[in-house]
Image (cartoon, rainbow, N blue to C red; front, top):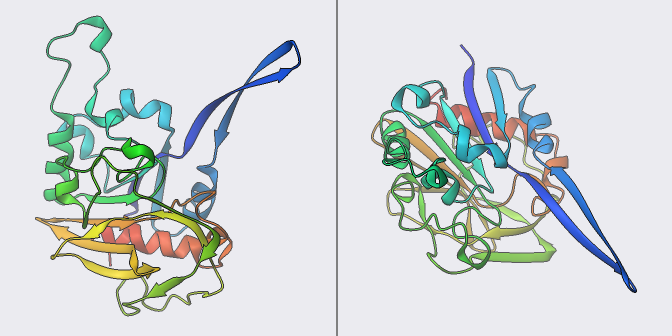
Length: 253
């Protein structure tokens, strides 16, 4: 049976105001960076991938235990905590607004779900601390803690290489890692005592894993899509790495 993966995020709507002397123009566009990971992970054997764009998360992300049960693994990439915590309906004055989605999310992990949080400007702490995952019930089921309220980005425009600490971990065992691959940034996070650091970048956590109850979680601190991923996505085993992460989180390996 295939691992059912819900991949959330990595899309954005952009508005650009261009001034040409006295004349201005407003240009709107939509960026689907998620195709990088979709194209890498969708064709992998034993993976059934569904992508939820960032603008759909607040309204369509699972809320109830029954809805969470439809998934084996959830990947969050550039999805801020507000999208999960603030339920739709606040402008309609619905009281209560809905179920305890955050609490159900945590219970889903502890009950056997697999969570992968990938890096970005609105995951972990994020740009200007706007990701705000630190101190939340979801941080309690991550292998790392976040620098709450602070900008945790480490921008590396000159490129940073990755160091493998645990080549025999099931995620990396038998995976030929290309040391020429570089990333352009990551979120600085702090490993918990119960976590295992599988890879580092410049002495910081790059890939960490842990188990909570019956569930597993992964912290992957760079973005799986541009620009932070640098040329890592061009590595021949990029899709295999993500397949292994998903299957490890689902207890398939």
